Each structure stands twice: as structure tokens, then as C-alpha cells.
Length: 584
Image (cartoon, rainbow, N blue to C red; front, side):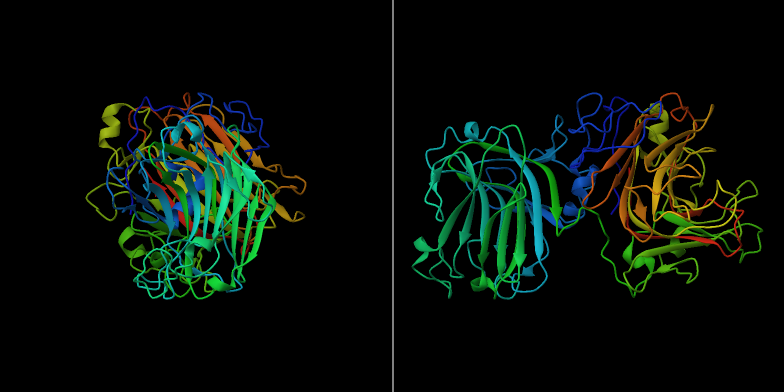
């Protein structure tokens, strides 16, 4: 499902807030934010938008539904948002903190919650290890529980159970295997005998008996002895604490800030299905909890991926109803490249040379050789590339112009925003570049465009991958083309230079990575994210670039746009996409 992001001309300029350090290799003039800042704060010191706009949360939110007592006075828990449907969503209990840029959960009242429920049910006795990691900071928790006369717990992460069948039946136990909590009151560690207050704890169920409902066939009246308490860390009001949960091979492991704190046998849990939860769940009498998540990593990756079926056409794996496709053939004898319209593309179209599903991993493959038909006589290079079409097949709307097919900046005149199909935009993609050219002119070798914003005649951004033949890894950079004046180039990873050395932090062929291209007003932000590495973020101020003027319209492009027309004819570029989402 697509949503329209409502933005105004007075929306604050902001950067993507990311869990990594945001280090960057570029020092190009015009970049108005220091990307190496450890807190990734924007030049204005504030963040705008919703959690799903920020790259470090997308994968988790694609795999979890939001459960809340909404309003908090309600005794029942509602499923507020389905997994993957967070675009444009926030509310009073789930939002992006405007100061830190972190995902925030808030809730008032005893036994009330604002939590993510990860939709996958898993078994803990298999060789596949299920993981959930988060950097968490409760905000002034002692003040939150100050009026409580009974209990001072906030549950932050859980491994809950779904019974022996993974369904709602009488095998489901009332209590989870694990709760990671903050507790203001003093507790005693069952392992060491030491006591701590204002600290984080792991509360672990030591059996698979029902301890609450005596009508349940699993009920056991020895429940008061069925929980162990493990001290994890003191509360640090200035820094988020990182928790890693690993469940599998009948073992539960908890690491805190990289140190192993719990490693226990959970064979007794083998017959049950489990699932993860994260957020805030109050176990105290009165007050409001506010808990921020700096990062949230599900099953070892932050890279978003679509639900891919390797036997299906691309449109069965990706939502393509608002794209058309250019391929370097000329079946209609027009003299230019063929265009597959929105309706045909979203109805199972495949071309097993240029655009198809990878039968090994389900990725959407874009393949293009140096030789082939081009989109126009003014175009120098061949492409297999998607073009955003917000009209979704309504041919009564022109492809060009400020209309419902295209979008504009929120810095454009209000009259233009009212006519456009969207205001501001975000393009998210997880991609691996599989092949690049190795022959031809030195300035053309090894380069391919994998994402763009196109305007009437120019490109606010073109995102390049480039790998030279003697290098093991490739570079990432982008071009910004103002409507007047010189084109600007910004290196993000490695160098675009024709004789660049092997980038030590580069990206190899076939290595998946995530990119986000985002425009809010006149601010362009490009983010590159990889598992296990710092995010790389660059911004560009487009105030003087001329794209906020009357008549200027935008559309995204994504795929493989080969930037070589001098290599041997059978030289090719190929990119495989595992996730693609355009938002306005």
C-alpha cells in the first residue's frame, strides 16, 4: 500500500537518524551537515517525520505489528498497525523523538503497553538462531514510577510464546520465556546473590507450565518458584544500553553492550513456538513511561527485504503498479527502447534476458548490455530501469507536468503542491550490483546508476555504483545537477576517480546494501546502510538549484542504467533488487 506524505514548506530540514556513526568520505563544498557527527543530529538540532522514514527502523517495522492500549484507559490491547504498513504513521504512543531522532514508545497506566509484536513464530530447538537487538534508553524512569504504590517495572523486550501449535489455543502459556525490564526497586540476582536497584534485569521462566490460569491443562501450582532473575546492567541516563537476544539450539543467550550476561539451557521450552516483542509494557501502578530505541535489529539484519518467492514474477514480489519499465529492445519498431506500462508490468510481466526474478533468491533482476536501444535520441546510454508513475495506469493523466503522475518539493509554491501527485519523496531500496563493464573509455568503465530523482530535464540526484576491473570492491557516489551551473559530485564510499584504488570500505559485486534517497523541501539526503558497518549519510542543500520553481516536477527511477557506451557490445551491467519502496 502506498501513502501520500503530507509535507509543508515550513517543515524543518532534517537528516536520517541512524544507529551507526554516519561516517562519510566526502568533503564536497555545499554539504551542509557534518556526517561524521556521532549523534547524527541535523543542522537545526531537530528531527521531523515518522519512524518509518528512518532507515534503521524499516526492516523491523516491516516484520512487526504495533499493539497498544489506545487510548491508555482501554483495558484491551488493539493491533494498531500491521507489519509493513507504517508509512506516514505515528501517534501519541509511537513516534519519532524530535530531539534525538529515535523511535519512541510511550504509555500510561498499569498493564498498558505500546509494543511491537514480531509476526514470525519460531521454535527455540532448531539450529536456526532467532535474534533481536536494540539500543534502549528509558527517559527519567524513576520519575515515571514515583507515584506508584505497587511495582516499578517497565518491560522493554520479550520472548513470548504462541503455544505448541503456533496458534491461539489452550497450549499458549500466560507468561513469556523472557522479559528484559527496567526496575526501580531492589532485586536480588539469582546467580550471584547481589542486589541492585534502578537497573536492567532478565526475568526468565524456568519451565513450560501455565502459572496463571488454573483451568489450563498446563497449569502447575508451583509457579512461585518458576522464575529466575539475572542482573544485566545499571541504568545509564545518558546513554542507550544495547541488548542482544539469541534463541535457538535450545539455548537462550543475552548480551549487554557486547558482554554475555546470560547463557542458559531452555530445553524445557522446545515444544513451544515463540515470538519477539519490543517497546514498553508497564508493570507499575501509576505513571507514564517514555522509552526510546536508538536502533532495532531483527534476525541479524537491518537491511529491508521484500517477501520473495523465487518462482514468481517480479510483480508478485514487489508492488509495481506505480512504475513503468524501460528495456533496451524495440519490439514496437519505434526506433527507441520499449516501455512496459504500469498495467502490464504489474500483471506478471517478465523478460528473461533483461527483467526477471532470480530463481535462486527471488530478487528482481535488471540486466542491460552496452549495445541496445535507448529511450530517446538525446540519451547516451542503455538502461533497464523503472520510472515512477503515480497515476497507476490512468492514461487520462499525462506522464509529464505538475500533475497527479509526478511530485514536487514542499518548497515549491502551494499551488504546485496542490496539483501534484505527491509532495517530497523517499525511495528505499536493498540491492546488489552483480556485474559492471570492464572495457571502454576509462571514465565509463565499471559504472552504473542504480537510483535517481529525475525532473523535467535534469536530475536532482543520480546514485552511482562503480567498480574498476583491478579492484575487489566498488564505490558509491552521487551527482547533483542544478538547473543552471555546474554539476556537483559527492563521494560517499570510496572514490569515483578513473584510477581509484581499491576502496577499503567498499562494496563487492553481489554484496547487498540499502540506499535511501530522500527529499524534504530543498534538502536532499542520501543514506547507504550495510549490516555490521556504520551508515554513510550525505546531504545537499538544493535551495539554489531551481527545482522549487513553478513547473518543476519529479519522479523516481531505479534499476540498472549502464553508464558505458564505449565498451564491447556484450559488456553489461546487472543489479538485483531485494526491496523497493517509493513514498510521498
